Amino acid sequence: ISIDYGYRMKQMKKTKKLKDVLKRALLNQSLGFEEISFLLSQRDAGNIELLFDAARCVRNRFFGTRVFLYGFLYFNTDCCNDCTFCKYRTSNTTLRRYRKSSAEVQDAVSAIVESGVHLVDLTMGEISSNQHEAEIEYKRLSAFVRLVRKESNVPVMVSPGVVPCSVLQELAAAGASWYACYQETYNRALFSKTRIRQSFSARVRAKRQAQASGMLIEEGMLIGIGETIDDLTENIIAMRDLEADQVRVMTFIPQKGTPMARWEPQDHLQELITIAVLRLAMPDRLIPASLDVGGLDGLQRRLNSGANVVTSLMVPSQGLAGVANQKLDIEQARRTPDAIRPVLTSCGLEAATLDEYRNWLSIRKEKYPAALCAEKVA
Ligand code: SAM
Ligand code: MD0
Ligand code: SF4
Image 1: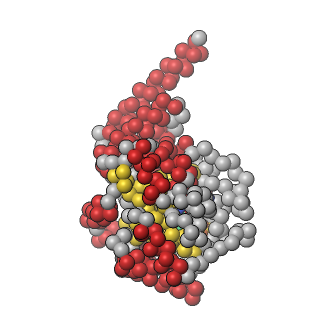
Image 2 (image 1 turned 45 degrees about the vertical axis):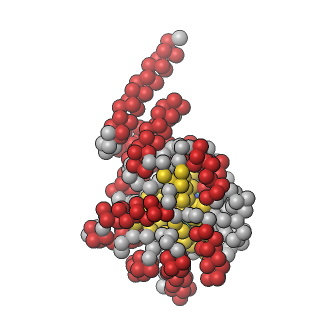
Image 3 (image 1 turned 180 degrees about the vertical axis):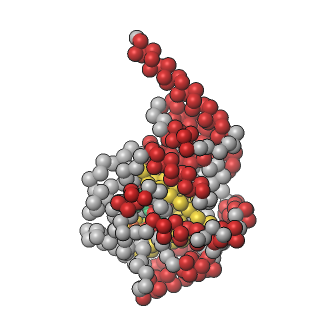
């Protein structure tokens, strides 16, 4: 009885502290390291529900019931990098890769735009610099950006990995609204172990250069690659310091043919908790629920943790792959705007209109003009 009593007292104290921190967040007060790490450490089911409730409340206050939909288009799966967590690392020879022709990309763009997404995310593996090949691929990417902009009103995100500053400027000039480049972790030792032989600072610098070129940026982190709660806390603070406009977290999915193939698969609870904490720490930012990690079945709980964007929407029959899950739900047409609509409804949400999304983008760009960001580029 006394052990039980002691445990309950401790639990009550924790719940009291949690309510205090949530109240601060709900009053728009900025959360510090200790509070963020406390929120990320929640393990009691009842307390986690309180956290999710607060995150949904903040999301609804900033975004109402509207959710943005992002189409994903991975047009070249070749990559020179060797990230230990990624199926597409250069050393993985067990993989069939593709590089879609311009005509194929054109078809895929038409299909995804027609499905009703609010953005197209043009993604590719990294190409080593100083190569003729790189120049060709960057030119193709800019041409694809222009193509989407010419054929539709739909904004574009580019995800080419680290590229030279001149390429970022060219992509911005072509009409790209967003540059996505995920640090995965702000722990430099863990970065070197996973994004091996890549420069930590060059990856951060590329994001600052993209901001200075007038693009919005997306930052992201991985869960389950050997990080601690303190590391996750540092990631969130770094994302906030960077003033990233969209911030994401994804659970690492072990990939055959990679050094991390035998890592224990994670349940996705820490990802959900982290989505909620991102929402409380950065209430006005876009936060994805990625279909790439948990598929259609994982969408509801990601939205109920405080996400307000559905990413990795894909249409079938295009021969295109996902990243964390190469195939999950794609050919079954379970990653389309139509397939997710009932899930949005079940969460009390609905798809925004394209105008609402474009409006959000222009307000955000006005608030953080490129000139201010340029001052931060070293
Ligand atoms: N190649 C570019 C880059 O790395 O920036 C863009 C595409 S990359 C494939 C996109 C992201 O997918 C990575 O930054 C990483 O966060 C995520 N990713 C890769 N492998 C993953 C895995 N096994 N599980 C979960 N996410 C993964
Ligand atoms: C996603 N599979 O949204 C995509 C990808 C790259 N900018 C995004 C990781 O989950
Ligand atoms: Fe290449 Fe990106 Fe995969 Fe790293 S995460 S191996 S850079 S595709």
